[in-house]
Each structure stands twice: as C-alpha cells, then as structure tokens.
Image 1: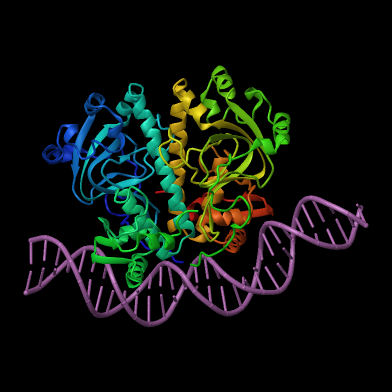
Image 2 (image 1 turned 60 degrees about the vertical axis):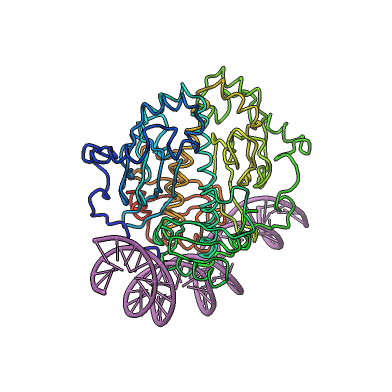
Length: 280
Length: 280
DNA sequence: CGGGACTTTGAGCTTTCTCAACGATGGTGG
DNA sequence: CCACCATCGTTGAGAAAGCTCAAAGTCCCG
C-alpha cells in the first residue's frame, strides 16, 4: 500500500516545524473574534450549547461560574488552526459550537486525523510530559466550519482542580473515554478493510452524535457528516478515492443512502454493524 | 491490503464472546500462584521492581503501605490471559515483573495489539462507561513470559482516591501519557509504510525501556524484544512476514543488527529516526 | 449562470498479503 | 551430551487490496 499523499503544505506559514514562542491563538491579531464570540456564544454558561455536556455537566451552576471566570470565549472561522503540534501547551479548550479535527503530521506532509470533536468536547490533555507540567501539544487542532470555544490557561484550570474534585474526576473520565475510542481506532486502522472502516466510522459517528444512545437501532438513521472525504480518508487511514468507493459500495449494497455529500442515511444499521466487525 | 489473518482461535475456551460472570482471574483455581508470587514478588513494596516507577512512585512509603493493604500479589505463567475483553471490569493491575500484551479482537479472529506493558505500568483504565462506574474491559491482557502483578479491586482503589490526591493526579498522568502514545500509534497505523512502522517501533520501544531517556542517542543501542514477530505484526498492523522482511531490510541497510531473535542492536538510531518519520 | 472546490469513477501500478517451503532455535528425552 | 521435534522465523512467488494519476461529474456560491 502506498501511503505517500502529500497533503499538508509544509511551506505554508504556521504549518512548519514549531520553533518560536507564539500563543496558540493570538487574540490581539483578531479583536473582531472576541466580539463575534460575545454575539454568538452567550456570555452566560446557562445558555451555552455545552452546558449539559461533557466537562461542564460535571459542575453546579455556582462552580461553573467560578470556572467561567478564568475562561475566554473565542470564535473561529472555518479552517483556523488553533492548536499547533509541537507548540508549547498553554491552554485547554472546551467546544461550545461546531466541529474540530485533531491531527498529527509527518515531515513529508502525510496527515493522520486522530479525532473529530464536537460540542461539549474537552481538548488539550494530550501534551508531552506529565499533565501538571508544562509540555508541548502532540497534535494540531483545526476548525471545520465556524467554531466557538471556551479557552482556559492550563495553569489556571489545573490550579482550580484542587477546588473541584468533581472536575478532576471528570477529567479522568474524559481521558479514559478517549483512550477507549483510541483503542477502537487502532483496531480499525490496523486490521479492518476499507469498507469495514467506513461502516465502523458511520456507526461510531452516529453514536458519538447521540443519535442512537441505546446501542445500534434497527431502523434507519440520518447522520450529518461535517467533514470532507479527505478528512474521512485521513481519519480512516485510506485515500479519499477509497472512502468514496467504499461509500458507493455501501450504497449499491443498499446499506446506506447519500442524499447530500454531507449527509448519510443508515438504512440498516444492524447489518452495517455486522459488516463493521461489531466488537467481540 | 488484505487483512484477513485468523489468529485468535475463537473456539478456544476463554477466547469466545464473554457472557458469563467469571472473575478475570479466579485465584481459587490456582492456589499455587499466590505462593509463587510470595516467593518471587517480595511482600514489601520497598523491595518491589515497580517501587520507583509509575503509579507507586507517586506515593510515600506510608501511603503505599496503606494501598498495598488492598492489593493481592499475583504471579502468572506465560500465555495466561488475565483480562478478557467484554468481561466485567473488577480490577486494576500494576505490573511488578515481566511484560504483558493488550489486544482487541474481531469476531473472525483478527487481532490488534494495542500496547505492550512492562514493569511499573498500570492497567485497567480502559473500560466502557465512566471510570467510577462499573463497566466492562474493552481489551484483553495476556502475559508474555512469566508476569508478577499487584491486583486491586476497582472499588477499593477508586475509594482510596479521595484519600490520595497524588494518586488521582497520577492516574490522570498515566491516562494522558497513554493517550499521547495512542495518537502516535494511530499515525503509525494509518500513514506509515511497513519499514517506517518497524523503525518507529524499535525506537519507541527503546525509549519506553528507558534505554535512551535523553532523546535519541547517536551511538548504538541494544534492545530486548520479549514479544514474537507475530505480536509485532499485530501491534504494527501488518503480517509477520512483512515484519520479518522489514527487519531484514533494515539489517541489509546497515541500520540494525539481529544477534538473536529477541534482541536488536540499533546501529544508527538517528538514521533510524529519520526513516521512521520523526515527528514534526 | 459560471467557476472553483470537492467528489466520483476508471485504469494501471505498488505495496503488502497469502500461501508455501525452507531454516533456525530451544527444550526434551534417550 | 546430542539428536529430535515443535515452534518460531525467513524467504520466495503469485494474488489482491488499495494507491496513483487522470478525467468526468456535482455542488455551492457569488
């Protein structure tokens, strides 16, 4: 198998090896973003899309307010890279709106997307060195479409941990859950065929989007895919063309429909699961 | 790429889908093991191979003694599967001696090794559901060679967490570190060629074994590989034959020597790193 | 309505897999 | 102590999955 697609333009500013000391996101360059954030992400946590998801859900209104006092609200345009692999890790992020792709790169431009994160997801644990010490991000993060986030400095959030035992436990839960997903992805990348990969992804994504909270449903299910085929390819460890062919094959087999490029209907989720190699 | 090797004998007792309620390791069946453990793993933490590694290193002698009071010491023969994917998660383990392989399986027998763990490694975080709630293991664990471990019930260890804040933080560190490694492995599985995979593994393993704590050294380095070629293959997402060919190629290129099957000499670690696609 | 970006489909090629035979190695029993 | 056997590893040849390159099709947005 050839794996030599060159996708990341390594000469593009901001995508080269990280040497300088630059904040992951320099707000002074983009004063507008703050205003945009204020308009689109409500200042009050109570009105936030992520209030009852993920990390924020672990806290009472009062605790959350304390935590919010150390958070910046930020809004990003599509395509904005706001975490750079190799850069000093200064912040944690919590996603309030939109979808983000996390990825790692090779020097020749090959890219592996390690995850997609949506509303309520917490981001920034994966740094080199112990969690409490300063380290460097081991991944990059980029907005798919418009994204709103809460940004915390690592120092302030880690300092708050002793005040909020629930938060520390929740962080452990988040990390554990990500580990479980990562293991699953290793099985996919190491041992599944292209069609199995795509089928697995569709089910996992539907599940992640809480569309089928009670396991795999028997009836049909419509799933929104905010990412491109290229993103899917880089997540599933195949090429764009292979993703496209796999989707076409699933369509031809009658397992899915593709009403729009960014929308898939799972016609027979159970059969899809069998094809995906449902876990032992 | 064809990925249809059938390796795990799904008809073998203990490797089938888990339905029953059986402890991960029933000591009543193996009273000898306890004695063996007592002989080989000293009862005192102070004399344990893992005392100053990983989790145990986060605790004072006094705290460790308290923790040890809720631990069983267990010794396992080579090949013993002591955690079963899908079984109820009742224990955590800490490895005191030997090496363990963690893996996930597909119904048709394909296997993906998700990690190798050695002395000081902590095992059992990866369960379905939140860390604090009862769940099921999402991986299996098997001894490579003889293994000694400390076994904790999840309930007792999680109960102790509130008494030992250092321990909780350390657990988060462990989970974070595993996440970083998992991301790296996804890049390997999704985007690297066979030779790059093997080169990456050799360096990562040397690093994990603390043979080159200060980064990649310029001079040669001897690495012990306790696992078989098949294990390597299942870890690297290729076949045994491909691992063998990659090693032969690295030998022919003068980058490594293979004095014994389970021993590799890295002749030019830096060149190997360049080949492995050292991180951006 | 037109242009650019994204997607699909096709044809030939490369890497890796599969299958098979041969070689090494380590443990065991004569 | 050595020969034998079982297991594990290596090497080769042909097959196949997925990759590359190329062209045609779609869709969105101005």
